[in-house]
Length: 295
Image 1 (tube, rainbow, N blue to C red):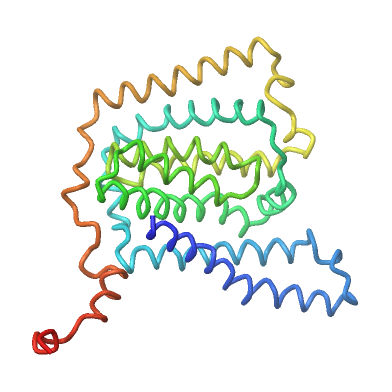
Image 2 (image 1 turned 135 degrees about the horizontal axis):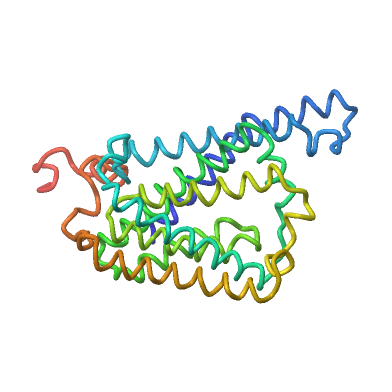
């Protein structure tokens, strides 16, 4: 858990760093130009641009951190290493899970604190990139690759590793409307990671989920976005869709368990790669020669 906490702190610190470097100066300039009126900046294209740029740059640095310090092994070759069959089998599972958990979220109906911010970002190029592309990459490498992968290598049971990483994934979203959905869909991405040994299926699934949400926020009005499925298609069709999505999700998992290769043996891989950040720190504290130990 120490690694998970440390990486989540890095995740937020990089966001805070670029907020300080980019967003705060932009806010200051706009305030100076508008006589100190905060409302003149809030919700504008300039505000959305700075938020989007902050998220993109902090995401790039977080990805660099995870790869450079060998928390995860990831490059363009990673996409070629996953069989096409695995990707195609993952898509029905992801679509079924998205639909099922979305209806569940509508039933729970928690407040959406960040709706206006997300709508604004989705209608901005940098904002859309940060939601649809950067978030899937960063979050799958962090929560599935670095955190869940480490828990599995430590000998945690697959269920425990998936639930712990998904719980952290849900909590860091902060927004009440997102937390339950993020936890649930994170568990699906976590199972895909455990079963395949790759973050690629989760990245693709995460990209599909976030892209659909981004497109909806681009083209739909606020009233349409807040319309529940049951109000759009009726009670009977909603129940049918709910049941069908559950069957698709469970059926996909059952089929993949039978037809995909066995899950990798994570305990056969060292928890700390030779050049990882943790080991580099440990080495700096060790004596340079045996004589120092004897003294």
